[in-house]
Length: 293
Length: 275
Figure 1 (tube, chains in turn green, yellow):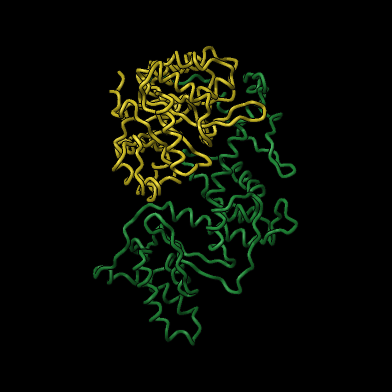
Figure 2 (cartoon, chains in turn purple, yellow):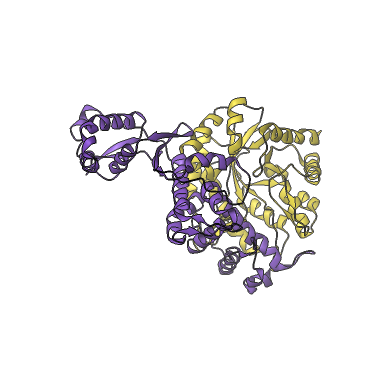
């Protein structure tokens, strides 16, 4: 292409972009476009209508920008949103997006890293929630964010052929690392969040949802996509540990580490159960390949 | 040189395919002339989206409607985006592809919104060159949609329809005319929606969009796509049909999406309005 847009367009779009990315002011449980802070060069270029001044007209775009992005995050992080309330959650989304504004046409890309951001941004111990006298346990919110992120990632993963071990693989199986399917995830929860999630997805509401009581011991799940649906399969704690170890170690390394962590009284039965767990994971299509280390 | 007019029935009624309707569509295979998909929702490698698309495309024509081309963005068009769009158009054998006469990002950022520009002469040539390039790359008709807008700029030197028509004409591409957007902008900026319709060359209209909008307490109309089509928009649609029909018509419903039968009933109103 031979022609280029005039230079003023770049300045105009830079100013317009800055206006619509202006964070909304948070006061008394509501959000307000701070339109008195907009770039004056742009507001002087915008025309008033019969009903609205230039700033108020630009504020429509400012609000639209933020609420569109908030809605995307609510859809991807429903548990996290409702544990914090929409209002409190939106505050964290704003901080995240001010630091990392969207750069890609694929809106999915802006969600990447939000759960890690929350680990840095949430206060230790408990997190205050708008409209609630009691704060929420920060560890529960972080767990919810990890679970939301896994559900979102697994559902949208590409379809890859499941790994089917052959005789050729047998020779190098122990010294290689199994590659997990992107359409699978091992989850650990200390609150019944996986059970709560589908309920919350169907609910209408923006207020904080009460956190159910904490378990005495963690529960573990294998999250898998089958066709176009997600399935949660319960895992024993040590089975989950094995699957977790396999993500970073060779098969023999993972088995050795698991045995090392296993109480002496359980070691005699470990080879048999380990074989059963591995066979099950293969049958479920949890792996997509084998990688030499 | 304009690409050949696409093969949809000239009076076809189509529906924007949205996630809540995947199940009912695949179960009941409703009597719809074609479906329109949001291109960006199918450009990635997410398996569920692709599986649904594969099933739907076996039974219906599918047209693509994008929100991420950034035609009027000051930065060059993304060749990676365009490559994927071309692949998708080929994959579904789309009769045509459309996007908006707007910008969606600048300075390396994506704003995920359809944003306006001042309507001035010195944007027309570049916009037309880009639209022509996109159409050549796609190898099929490419349509530009008019926006709903909430602000105008004092340095505009022509009305929107003049700018829009000039870009389409110079590019040799097509109008993807949104009647609801004409109505919304005409109310927000106090211009005549009838004048807008009169200025459009309907021989170059690929399709007409209809959708619902909402009215704010201050009187501003927002293009929300969250409810049935307003009576005023149906009247404008009827006027377009009587003066310039036939043309394929597509209903968009993107928020607060009701069950499929309700959306189909709304779409069928188009046939009644035309009668």
